[in-house]
Length: 341
Image (cartoon, rainbow, N blue to C red; front, side, top):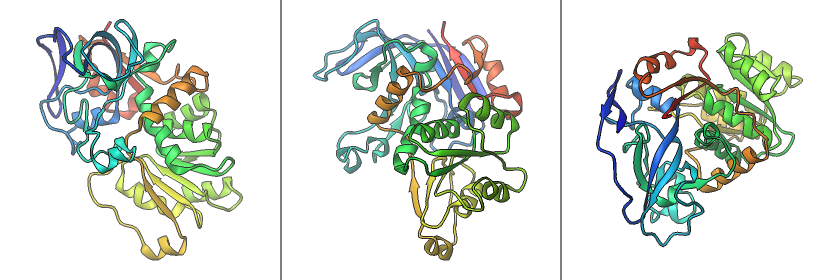
């Protein structure tokens, strides 16, 4: 079978590898249908993913077909032949985080396609309890569920008060997902971004009209939009140390800052500013099974129009040539997808 292997930074190759024949106990064997390309994949290609080791089969945003189910005591909502999305977080189930329902930050977390081989291959096995059936959703939507869950989890972490003003900094796919679910949760959302194409996408695809061009006087634009005030809730989805450190300045007194993007190093902030504003600082990592349920419910209800999101596609035969282009924001990529059929 075909597998796409990231052998080292900048080197992606198509390999022929042996296909698994059946699922062992506690596992499911799946055929991969679609793979969403995540910022994590793009950073790994560029050698900028600090959790990554090479060689690696990437791919954790997945739509799959179930081929076989091994013996299991778990109650499963799917059967052979069903299409499912994948929860790619392989947690231990025993650590303090898992015992408290926070499997998204398990102390021994391994993520498909990051710490262990993922779904950029025709077939593979995974724990049977990491599949969720989503009747009626097309494959393209199934492959975007995990991405949306990152934004949904950030919105739930923030405990949004309906009507409060929220600023999302960074309009990559995770920022867009965060803006989408902050809006669904009742926030009045504005988005700050340097890329004009992505700002236009926010207006056209998400219906967000309060847009902040980060290349100009962003603070002045934010205050002008809010009658001289600052938002009570800010999400930073950039993964940029400079942006994350600057985000503190955009939060109103008594407000919250949620760091969604990850930076592989230290960031600093002014403690007098932090204390005088009595800010609440939160991190948001991955997503929980409850987030997956929420996202699937919203997709089934038609609350999210995903049709414009996938702007670039490739097949296994073409991805080696196409992938380097997806790294460049100038290509206008919002979301890229690998099709296995």
